[in-house]
Amino acid sequence: MPNSDLLSSLQFKINENQIALEAAIMKLTLWLDQHGATAVGGNVRDALGTITKNKAFTKMMLAVMLTPE
Image (cartoon, rainbow, N blue to C red; front, top):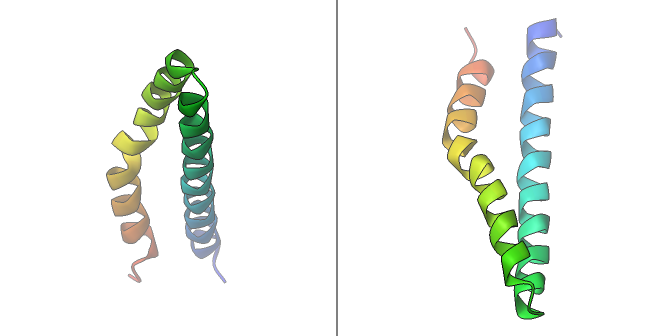
């Protein structure tokens, strides 16, 4: 397997991990909100906004990298 294929596969797995971490952090944020730490929850949501903002670009670039030449 060429190195470029390995790099694409690695990027795909890193993206999967990022999405899973985002989901886990959001669940913790909802728990914080339910227990009165709404300011903290808001700060976390703001930080997670970066992931959301970059998600479409990341998906598009992975599709390009994984498309055979």
